[in-house]
Image (cartoon, rainbow, N blue to C red; front, top):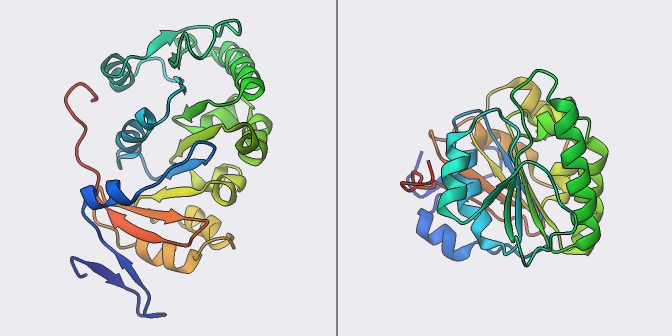
Length: 245
């Protein structure tokens, strides 16, 4: 493997490997464009999400785990307020950066989470202009049963200038709209056959190229795909800054 490109023997295509700083300068993310982060646990999805989110003005992060020290540190470092419930009367201007984190300490916490997140998504949709980050889309869809709301966001929220940022380690079990409605896709190395089959079903991007690259990506490197332009490149985000861990 070259330091500069991955050359695919099947079609002589090349996917450039670029330094992180060069990627940062080239990456353009407009309000209303969706982003998907797809890779196994520990690959670097959260690190990349924490780099992306401060680029937006009005941000809501859905906290789903009982404890998440990295999310607490990220919120403190970037001026986020941690909220257990959603107040629809509070304006985005008053609380522009929120971590919505209903109690998740019990086995039946999903009922409370579903209610709080559903209310928040409905209000943000009406208001427009938000960026919503979901740290594990599979959980929101399969456990909390919010697949319909997620699909509406993916299909319709662009008109409301809402950006949805989703992360998942189970690409075979999330709505296919994640792939064809997201402008920006980030993939980490994955050898799971079910996940690769899901990619093979997609027609909006070069699935064959993506699968070839994913089987060969170095650790912590990420493949970026712009589904609108077809642009692809590989980069490696830096380790998280102190205070964002």
